[in-house]
Length: 166
Length: 166
Image 1 (cartoon, rainbow over the protein chains, first blue to last red):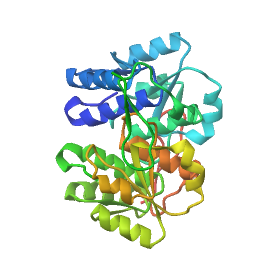
Image 2 (cartoon, each protein chain N blue to C red; image 1 turned 90 degrees about the vertical axis):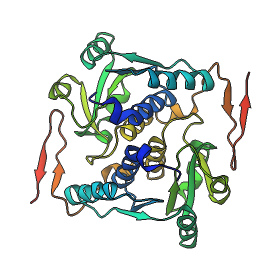
Image 3 (cartoon, rainbow over the protein chains, first blue to last red; image 1 turned 180 degrees about the vertical axis):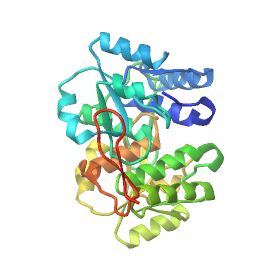
Image 4 (cartoon, rainbow over the protein chains, first blue to last red; image 1 turned 90 degrees about the horizontal axis):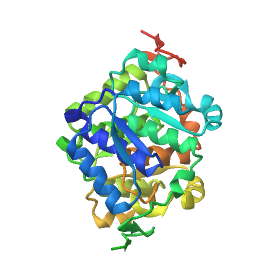
């Protein structure tokens, strides 16, 4: 929410790729530019999986998530510390995580089920998202495999090893 | 390493702020532009602490870190999965964490003590840094307090509460 495409293109790309890599099904963006969609499509094609980029306003995304029984977590430095709420959150299974740039409407704070802070310091919505989903999944997301890849990395202590799956 | 200022300004800012918020003492950048330094200085002044931005080439930063007994961890999607190496890393106390944009010299892979992957998928050096330092500190970094602040957030389940310390 509240990202401007020109200024925040790189942040939006990072949000998409982090969400995908850490196991999210989809990202909802208020505006989906063609270049961003092409980048994500290419990542899916190369590295596998079917992560989706959906154009949708935040109010509808919140309403749909709630109707489906998802818990809406808004990440904000003003919220309740993650470490104080993570046990409660882990009892839920499905989430919509909302992140914003500097200007987020106050309604977001009201409509979210939880306003959660990954530290009460200013830093990065990309990092906050990463730590939240890492904690919700207790690190299990690091082992996720992506189906239908063309390239797959073979972990290596030095250099780069890639498996080709043409 | 390998970030270009114009293209990567936002990523560099996020790297600085994430490093600071999650407890790093300093960040080493190959180029420090005035605008970036001003942003970080303002964050220190407002929110506390004395996080430093240092202009230094990666080779000197690596050499100095090794001379001081720091472990050099290079984050790369090609490296060894974090979950396979984190116990070993936690036995060390001081670190230099290296992150790069798409183009990192192959020497970096050779000179790092560990090449570590936070997933073997492409995503974001900001997220990878966040998850690494979160794991190294077992989440304790989320409780860090910053001295000498002018503003401090009072965690809140709805809205924004800030303590003013003029």
